[in-house]
Image (cartoon, rainbow over the protein chains, first blue to last red):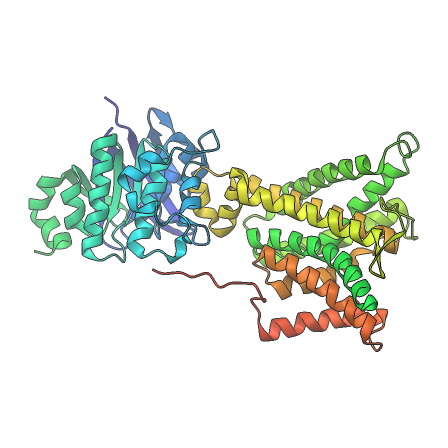
Length: 233
Length: 298
């Protein structure tokens, strides 16, 4: 079966600086894939290239179709991208942020009951300005909003950034839940390799814009090079 | 007392005109951080379009005022969207300063075009309201002022309802706060910016049509009004639509009161006073009275 998302020799550059040199990777229906690597390895750029935020060369095929166009088109094709910094509308309320998640769907009232199953605490905070939430709550709100897009693939950029370990674990628990119960495929970029490998089935390790290693998460955990470089033991 | 209320109603009527133009400035500023210097000229130009409809040999005088009003608003909307698509959108990736320069160019072009098409001489512009007054407790309340105030604020209210309660309005607010994130949610922000320009043009048309009857129609009629609107927008805070409306009304009332009670402030001094207010606010409280600083936590 063809993978849900497939990158074929994707390159991208910021001005004169090349950030990706022909990255190829795939995400299957219903699996969690981690994208690991040091700062500046091109993890975030890979997601941005898929979304069309940066110009890219090479093919990105999603659900059998070649993706083209900017982030609006990618979102409409069924990919939810929670960007670096979470992309919360700080001045809007929690509820308004959620309604924006359902922006692409027809009908005035989005069905928010399913989202409350996974994020019950949002109900009590619905009229709070989103910018006043804690970092962990903002990350959860971004997840909930992405879920409301009813995507087939969720791309998460550094969900653990700036969060306490306990909160990070909670975020990954919810991601795992969404994957298991909703069959949502996830491509997650992480610096924290330990927690990402625990959640993911497979992983790719990026080094200076190239895929250096890839494989099953369990195999990578015991791979000596990966262990010393990213897991630190 | 009578004098006070008369000054107040005049101030509210003038202020509502400044308020709608100030709101138009804020709409575009909030979405793009660009001050649209052509806002006044856009208002003037659309008022000329209303004038052209009104004096049209075929359906001019058979068309009731409010039809002309509505048709003008529709044309203004198309005009605003068109300007954004043709002039502003190609500059999407340019710096804010470049876009601001483009709006200044637009100002000059629109003023020139209006002079060329309709000649610079003053023209009579009709008012939908009678010149008579109501007398309430000894105070003469001008129907013209009341009508101006009512129509202008009704338009502002409709716009507020749109932003508050519709999905598209919400998307426009979201796009103004964080355009990159909005695009990731499937929002075509480029079109929403055009929509914003459309609304700004409509607000301008309302302020133009409401101010033309009392000061005659001319290619430069909105110059001073735009300065008053600027003062209002800065006073209320350029980031705050509510502040812009309050600021516009405030400037209207203040100028009217000064004109009534401080004899040193002759009509010629209204503009310098407005500019002085603008300057003081920028020096003392650059965020404006209602411009809130967004609370952020990491």
